[in-house]
Length: 128
Image 1 (tube, rainbow, N blue to C red):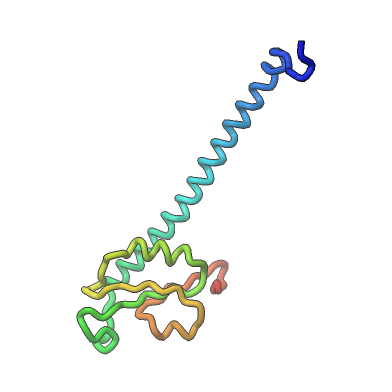
Image 2: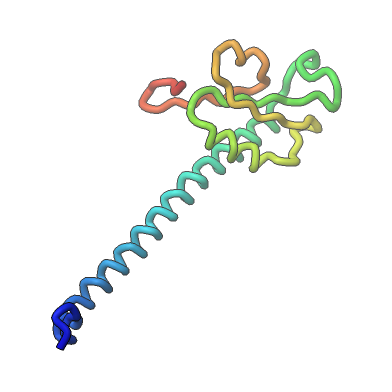
């Protein structure tokens, strides 16, 4: 008998704990994946809302003078994640015939270059 090798009885006692640990890890991984998908789907809903809002909006002729003038949609505040989802959602789409450009704004000075701005606000505070 090898003193460093556990007996079969000792192994049988430990196996349920290892199985429970393995199941717990799988469950945690699934929950983390679901949480990531949930936040992405929230961003996708917001992106669709902005797209439909922009499609129903009208701008003065001087703000989009040519048929191929770019409509600039800005995101003010927050992180780059929403801007990336918005870019992916609107890739290849046009609004009233105008190509769309998504800009993640970092200063209030940039607001004047946008046709439509989405501000990221949490708890009543504009996020930088």
